[in-house]
Amino acid sequence: MRRTLITLSCVAALLLSAYALHAAKDSQFRHAHGIPSRASVRDIGEVAFTDDIPLSFHLGHGKDLTITASAVTDQEQLSKVPTAFTNGVLQLKLSYTSKSTSGATTESYSERQTLMYPQRGLLALTLAQESSHPIAVLMKPRLIAQ
Image (tube, rainbow, N blue to C red; front, side, top):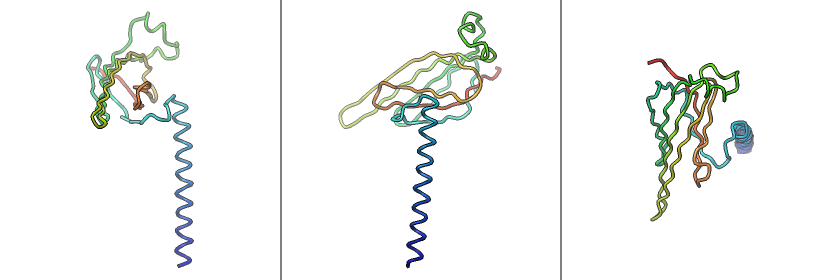
């Protein structure tokens, strides 16, 4: 009986320390990518876009995101991007909508964004920052040839 109690105490301590480590890493990740602590996070992984063809993502609970990507080739637009990133810059056009119902109340939210992003690394998009249910979408976008 005593051995079981000691084993259970050790397992509980391990679980607690693992949770604390995960919480610390989560906090560091959110801070590094500018993700608010109250935002839910959806990782949609590597996304292959075809030039100017929209892709839709259902993020759950009435939240939908449509992204259209295109290669930035206009020199005027590229001049606004740091020179280290001018190879493979994408223009992403985002359309986000959410609808949530609580009792008899329905809350609707929509937002549009356009941004330029180099095709390397992780992109963290925080959407609906001003709403009561912000969401961060993580992805690695890339453009494929048609």
